[in-house]
Image 1 (cartoon, rainbow, N blue to C red):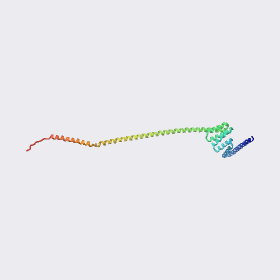
Image 2: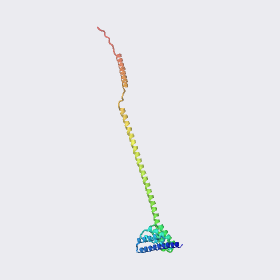
Image 3: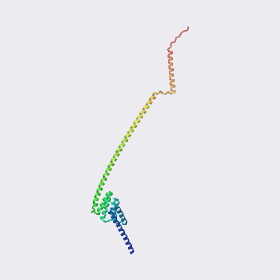
Length: 255
């Protein structure tokens, strides 16, 4: 039993030693911070947390050192950590106040407003948080108004763009229709000219055909010739008969 108590006592002494060492690192870090050696101070605070994660001072002071180095996103993480570590209203209020400042630097205005409100909830007398809250709310309002203005301008620009595109499309369609109508007219004119040309050529061919002597086949030629010969023969017969009929015959006696 005594041996167990002795072991527990040694463990307690070990924890106390670690805690004292952690606070020693915090004190050294504070000195560096006062001398504006913010990066070295951060390292000391980190060493303090490695030895004992519980002290709120480590997280809070690391946040301050990172803030001075303009590492606002990292600083915000440690300020939030510090606020969650403590039940002390004043310390919590200050942690939230610094968190709001870091978020404000990051232009995260809504989150910044929320942090300042948390600071005032824990300490309504924190005038710095009250002032910064009013400033952050004003900035947020201006941002929202600017966003709304840009949204309207974008909408107007989109409408103008759409209107221009519709106008261009209509003009293109009108131009295309005009081109199509012109092509149709040219095609019809060409077809009409081709038709007239063909008609003229056919008329010319018909005239030439009429002017050309008809070709007579051999059989037709023979029939025509035979008919002509027959007519000639008949004509000769008629003439012969007429001649014989009209001749006066004198009979003389021979001596």
